[in-house]
Length: 358
Image (cartoon, rainbow, N blue to C red; front, side, top):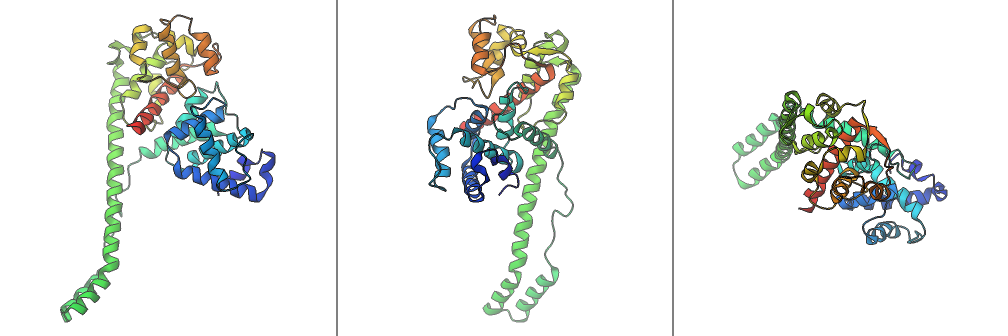
């Protein structure tokens, strides 16, 4: 059991019973065994209080716990379901290499304009996961002690046995002596392959981010065919963040991403509303930014705003309906840097969702 699970579950009046906590934890582990990208986004909608895409998912989620405990209710326990959904996401952020979980939490929080409806510090957990993942992904694996040769004495002993009496029984005995050595060599080979794969990923990340560095230093946007300074200051968080996100296939976030955006002319002291920054992009640029498929208003609030703005030619007519559906106040202001990071993360989460659907 996760060491914090009892604390996460305790706000519920029925959370004090030790047997109940154990049964609920067993249900959580069953969910974790089957979790995938669509499940993560549905769980995220639940904890933020947004409608889920399929009622079937809610029935399926309840069934994980019903199979463990027949007393678990299949209706009338929405608060418990919300807490359990939060517990699953918390464990994913704390113990799993599943970037879609922290990213979906952060994009749905929309720069802090929305708050999860559970008493679990999911936003901070997600931020910590993103930071540590970014740091660890960029660490080169150590090559020292990568290969450890088997015990030479055992190899010599096996050779000696066969040389002394080269017949089938002694050959079998020699092979038996060599068995542990062979297993060790296979294990070392697998270890080397994993290390090389990690090294290849690290080098790819560094190559991609070197291009991002040159992009930042040059001050020229290839995607928008313009100098950074010539792009409307209100539009930069959307347009430049989208370009930066498209420059890398890696889903992990560079720890220095805010510094990169700041050097690219996205002023962290400038506060904007989402409608302001979207409309500032202009219709032609919004058409380039529009996602391939209809974005979820909960998970991708900026891309949803782009789609809504295009419906009205980037006038103010879309704002009221967007605000009502998304649950974000039309006059809520956030810094340009926060908007840029939000756009970057939404794009990366879309990459994960598209990769899952392929």
